[in-house]
Length: 450
Image (tube, rainbow, N blue to C red; front, side):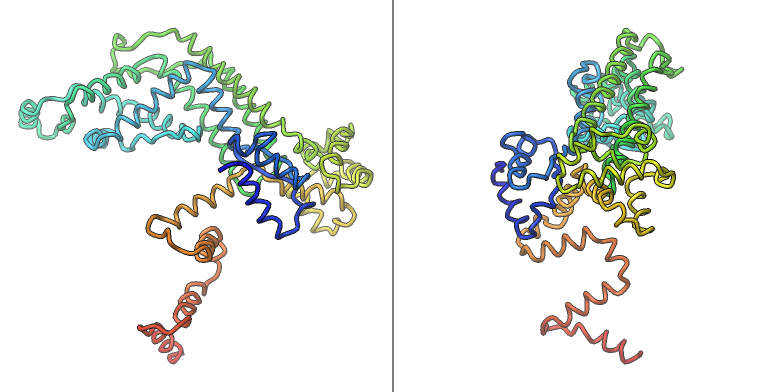
C-alpha cells in the first residue's frame, strides 16, 4: 500500500477525535514507506499534525544493530549464522531425519527468523547445549548401516538403539557430513561459544523493549547496561577457548586461524557498541525528555541543561519555558525527588502528594515522556491477535463482530477479573431472540432452587 493511502486512512480515523494539538509522537518500523523523510507516512502525518514527532521503533533498531554486526559487515559471522541455520533446515525437511534426531537429542533445533535476530539465540543455545548429541546423531546418519546389516546388528545386540533405518540417499549423507565438519571445526565452535555468551544480553534488551510500560529513561538505562556488557565481552575474547570433547580425535578437527576468529568477534562487538550508541541516542525529540529522568538529576543539579530546555520548547510549544525552568530547578535541588527510580515513579509521587498544580509543566513533560511510544510492539500484537481471530474459516464475519472479538482477546486480563462474565454472555445470547432450542431452562431451574 502506498504511503499516501496509509496517511489518508490514518487522518480519516484521527479526524474524529480532534487531536491535532495533542498528537505528540508516531512510531513505525523501519519500512521505507513509513519512515521515509520526504514522502513517507511519518513525513505526511507531520504536515497535518506538526507535533507528531517520528520515533523509529527501538525493537526494530536492535534488530538492525545485530544485522549490521553479524550479517553485513562481518563475513565470518555471516557465514557462521548461514551454517547454523542449516541444522534446523536439515532436520525439519524430513520426518526420518526428525525421528533420528529424537533418538539422540531431547529437543528439536528451532528455526531462526531473518527479521528477528533475537530468535537466533534459541538456535545458538540449542546447538551449543546439545552439540555432543547432534554430533552422534549426524554421525549415525552419515554412517548408517544398510538394511541387511541393520538386521544382523539387532540380532547381536537388541538393546542397541543407535542404528535405525535412516534415509540413505546421497544428499542426506552429504549434508550430514557437512554438518559434522562444522560441529568439529575450530571456527564454528569458537563463534558458537561467543554468541552463546552474547545472545542472552540481546534477549534481555529485546524483552525490555517489548514491554508495554516502557519509558525513555528506562530505555537509556538498559541500553547503557547492554553496551557495558558487550564491552566486557569484548575484553574477555582473548581468554576464550573452546573445550573440545575428549573422546573426539584431534585429527578430525579442522584447524583454522583462531586469531582471525577472535578479531571477527571483536569487530562484531565494536559494531554493536557503535551502532547502539548511534541509533539509540540519535532521536532528537527524545533528548529533551531526559530533563525528567531522575537518574540524571544529580548531574543537572550541578549544571543546569539549558540546551535541552531550549529544545523542549522548540519541539513542544505547549510547554511554558520559564515556568518549566523554575520547576526543574526546584526539582533538581530537592533530595526527595532524586530518590525516584524512573519517570513513572516521579509522576506517581507528584500525584500522591498533590503537587501536580505546583509542578504543572514538569507533569506535562512527564506525561509527554511516558506516552511517547518507543516501540511498535503493541500494534504488532494487535495484528497477531487479528490473525488468530480471522482465520480462513472465519473470513466472512462482519467488522463489528471482528472488532468485538479483537477487543475481547486484547483485553483478556480485564475479562478474567469479571467473575460473572461468561454467565452474562450466555444469558445475553439466550435472550437475544427466539430460538428453536430452549437455552434458559437451566437458568430458570437454578433460579427456582435458589
